[in-house]
Image (tube, rainbow, N blue to C red):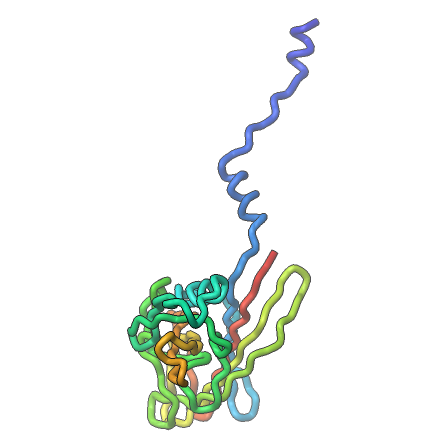
Amino acid sequence: MRANMDSKMKAKPEVSVEDAEKKVADMHVLMQAELETIVRSPDGKVSHHDVRKAESFVRQWLELLWVHAASLGRVSEGYAMRDTGNGLRRIRTHMDNWFLHALAAVDTHGILVGLGTTAPTIDDYRMEDQIPHGIIHPQLQYSDMAVGYPGINMNISQITITRSFANASGSAVTVYEIGAALRAYDRASWSGIVRYFLVLRDVIAAGIGVPVGDTLTINYRLQCEL
């Protein structure tokens, strides 16, 4: 009888390492960015449209977040962060930190474009080969930045930042590098000097061709997903 009962009992399968890791991963909130690129002609015709997961966040993003989470105020020495000019700046909390909105023709911060083709790394602190604002090839005309309101869609919360780049240079321009920089104050510049810090960087291996007269619009969607 005992043997019969034992034969009917089934051992519970062991949980594999892969299953355990997946369960833990499923419990985490995923922070990521989505990158959308669109090229339009003056009559509105779309010659390019792509949406992809961005490689994006570099170390300055988390470092600045930590500065504010740790409340490194005026009396502190701040935290050393590398700016886009390769200078180590001791950053402290300031009401104008995290400033991403840039006006038209300003190419120090906001969404930026470039010609660099080196794959992004977490330690990137600048664009490899930034395209400046202008009308001389391969320059592009930077519009002002638009920063959308936070939105919630099912289990995703996000904000969208947008900028357009018009080609009035006389020749086609191919964009390979896309990123974003924001401005923040260091402990030595409370009188009004600001520093700029790269927080996002992506490389499009195939490049994005922007014909003369056309406009490249870039949308970064910064997301948290449950």
